[in-house]
Length: 318
Image (cartoon, rainbow, N blue to C red; front, top):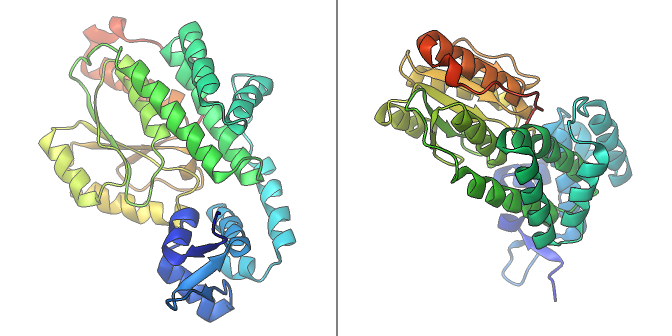
């Protein structure tokens, strides 16, 4: 039988709210109000965990926690759809029905059918269009479905893992990079989303870049050390909408100071849209913009190589 009570560690993993925050809210606002298990440890009912999930989503959209914690569940649910509809993308390349068909396979928990559907689209469109016109808008569409409550957390995780698998398998067939520029791809601590990085890696590799993937959640000092060790020309980071946008500028400013002056710092993802780029940091609002900048950079440094570069097709933001 599935337990209806969750430990504080489980709530932290599920919601993204730290244990310290949960305890502080309990003292200051009287919510959450956990029960106690046989050992005297906090045990959170499922209904409280779901409310905490809603609060975290709305916090990521810019709402203040003090106001949210005072609202009933119905008011929280009413806030999220309005915010989502107002920020919905206007340039999804594949039609909504096509995206909904793929989402339906995830909701039906049919991993094989979803994987086959992605592989068929990859074979039909090629890597560049597959990433820009299908995976990128689909990732945004799934994120909106999660915010709307149309899919469960485990279903969003299934989508992510299966899509990562297809992308990684496809990337093994890409030719080796030309060796320049050398691009180190990673994310800062607490940024767990990796799909954006995989999409950038695929598109940059198509442009001839040598990509060095480090996965997610790298300490800033380790990013700087890796950039030096690999003699990276560019450090590329991705921020999702789930990452607190107020934390982005100070982290980028610190990383910019740690990196060598000649190492460029490029940042993309849907989480940066309300953030002003710090000095010495380049922001890209879409995959297309990042690819264009890479192409222009290569042509300036090596004009003779321009004929060998792929021209980017229209894409969608991560």
